[in-house]
Length: 139
Image (cartoon, rainbow, N blue to C red; front, side, top):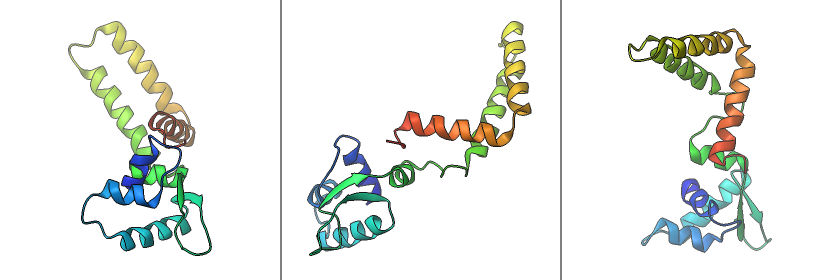
């Protein structure tokens, strides 16, 4: 449900519950979708305009929380360490590869050493911000 909503919101500033239902395809239970949208709205995964007569927003907009969850990216301050570990492993592989020229190995080793020496929290924060920026998760 959240993924379908965020897919629509990647092309539009706001969408309606009916557009989400259409995105989910034929046979979708509209009452189930509206209840789920109400829950996503209450928990901050989507935002929008609501009215007293219904529990779900009548006009849905994106939130960072929902965009991050739908994209599968970690919350700020969580999981970025995995990305740092992956980056360090990839650098190690490139440094150790026979086809990597010696001058490139030297540059890569300096970069790897700098990353490894930097405070882990700083790198995790930088990677989290980079990921959010380049995936649109912070829009």
